[in-house]
Amino acid sequence: MSTEEDRFKHSKRLLKDENAVKKQSKIAKAHGFPTGPEHRLAKVHATTCGDSNCVMCGNPRKFFGEETVQEQRLFQDVEAHRDKRSNGILPPTEIEDERED
Image (cartoon, rainbow, N blue to C red):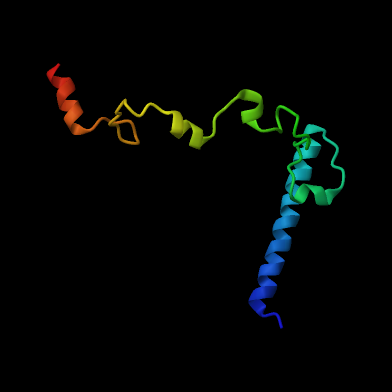
């Protein structure tokens, strides 16, 4: 029933999981963390304690009061028009205005 392509994809997934476990167990051993059950490292990073109340593992909005991107967009100052390109360079019309000043 399975084709050669299906078998190849399956073996690729297994290899990916094995590599992730090896990488995370190497990180855990380097930092002196207990490795515990190896299969846990396939989905969870070794340096994560897993406690959602931990400052390092929890949601930054809960601990530091950061806003989401959507909230930042909602609360930004709409009246102030910033005409800059994404790389920070001013448009040619504003460059000419600055030279005249």
